Length: 368
Image (cartoon, rainbow, N blue to C red; front, side, top):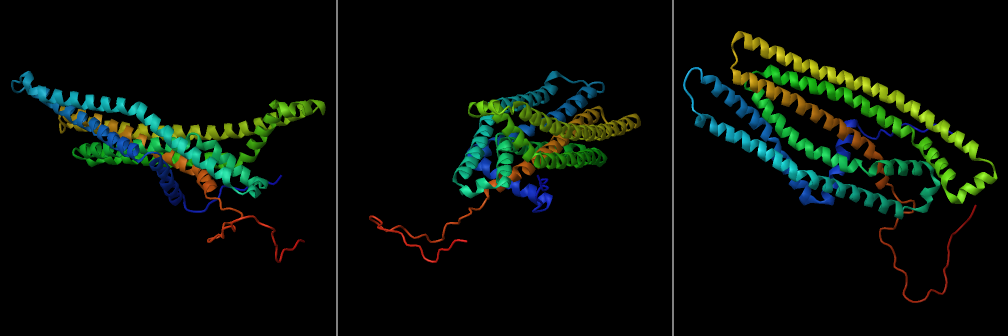
């Protein structure tokens, strides 16, 4: 058996991600344009609430600190408290509304992707069934179509809200010092670069394992299907097939184990980078606090905003990694949908004559 070729490199990585992302969003749009717009807008509105809450919390702390210098009444704090209540209530209400509805929408996207795959497979020329490469492509497309299109839609819906949060929070940090924004951006950028390496290795592994995985599933079917079990027992093949199935399974498991260990080390390094950036931000806040150049509300704002920025940037980085993974694996799905027919239909097909056909005449037909 010749080893399988490596993953096709038909375009640059960024172009491939963008190309497949547009096709994935096309699936989401085809599933329900109305729901795509609705949940994108709701996510953006919900994402404005955390920055508002952080800002109002800083204002509340400053007002309370002013009580040492001048008398304050509860009515002075009431508008801020009401604002915090509204921000929390709106965010929780939108989150509750989105919960089940967005799950149903993601399921709709999955069904649309599955429908397109089945429609394509049912109408392809039969000549493709004699090509092992075609079966590998179909296996890769079927393996991921049940969840990756929906998960890609979920990631993109969350990304729009995260971008709104990060812009507002970064604005709050920049109002105090731009160094805090740089620390957050550097931490997220390094994490994203590290996680992308894991994505490349995952795709390379799953691409190369497809023929062995198909053989493993085929052997499993032979051992359990009623139509083949009798013949396997008659020819005393059960032990041989079980042994081959076990060897393939163990080999694939060992390869996956090595790959996952490498991914774990990279993820741990990514977490260390993010934690270091957060610690440096606290060092910066502490130095400003000792020098007396930052108000109590400013401290609250920096801690809340930087924690939110770091967390949101981590979510954005994870989303980009997820989008990178999904678009990479969906390359097989979209390439399968783009398979050209072996016998192309003519641009202007001739209609069959009406009435009974008395005979068919072949001209210039040869056989070698």
